[in-house]
Image 1 (tube, rainbow, N blue to C red):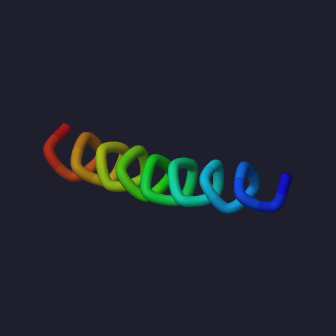
Image 2: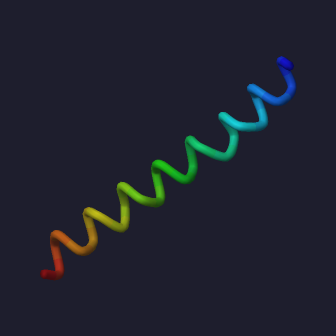
Length: 30
């Protein structure tokens, strides 16, 4: 269970960061 939790965190955190970057880029180059 712990392993799955860590694995999911390792995926969601960068994903969130990427989405945030994308939002920032689209906002800047609108």
